[in-house]
Image (cartoon, rainbow, N blue to C red; front, side, top):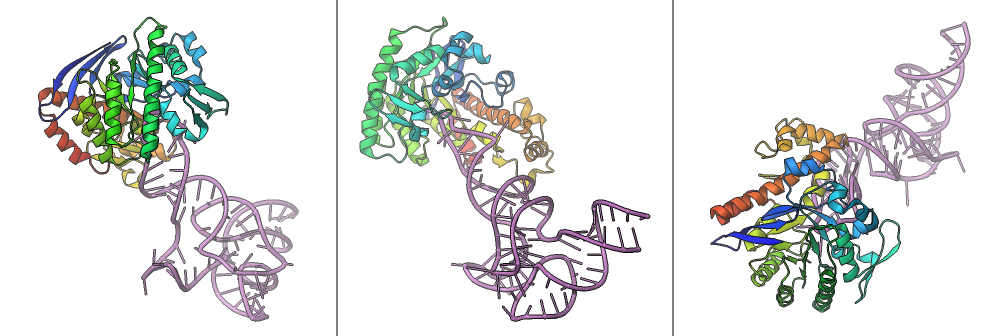
Length: 376
RNA sequence: GGGGGUGCGCCGGAGUUGGAGAGCCGGGCCAGACUGUAAAUCUGGUGUCUACGACUGAGUAGGUUCGAGUCCUACCACCCCCA
């Protein structure tokens, strides 16, 4: 797996590059739709491919391990074969579930014990078996097992947790290096920077992560409720330390404005549930800001969801029609808005790339942010 | 034509031995939230007003009573049975 850095903005740290994987290339900056349970909720693979133009999607180790289970995924020949998405995929390790399902787990040095949110059964996740599971799932990029710390998080806990994540990382790397891909193509392991909102911890963590010389690096533990200023500050510090020639993945971020700001700080890869979750709840992102398509004011607005969209779905369906679908609780409503929001996110990162290459990113970014920044 | 039954919220239920209702449950409607997905979910609002408090309100109009959504009378509407 190889990353080519193609352009760097002269006025900020934004970059454009290409990550070459066995399932195709990823042109950065890029947004990666989240497909936790082997599906980007409500969206067909051909829609991801043709209309949204997704270049890579996510899956989740914790969820896929619980259901359908690694035996089924192995039998299928890996996640790509199972869900039919034959472009690059990335799996998260379950580290986020250490945070989001904190009431269902116990952390020890060995690993984290979860009681399944599906049936209550007990499962131990260790750095080693999380690597094994991700080998079986077969994503192109797999993530180290970490603890995503909550916000707020006191310094002492953040420090202790960070060190444990670093120790877990060494175990992940050892297991990863001791095992081979199961399906005949390369997988890359990305380590994750932690350290909560503490500058010294972030610096220390970024240095530790960089020292492993992995193919790409990730920043975790942000977008968990901290102020945006903290998110940007931490991202900035970490980007100044992580190697320039390797892709940087900011996990779980974010809003369109978050993404633009963090591209400016030097981030190449993003993922977030907002475009799909909000879509299912009737919130759509447009070039002019976000709108709630369920609001009564759209009931007789027969203009397209987005007349300027580059994808077909967003130009084809009207606001009034999509509102009607939501009012009627028709499945097509969330499907259309999910496609729309993802297409918008992919358009956004694609435009950013164009402007970085053209050399006018910062100006374009600032204009976009002021247009979009109605608390996006 | 005769007999019986039922009437309160935007809708459907529940609730009444006469004793605190702007008010229970569900739906609808109107808004809001959501950041490496326990999420097609969750939260709030939904009579009126001069609004942290008031006022009006149980088909309509009267009556009985300290007190009526509840009892009585008339009328109206709807449903059922008989002709």
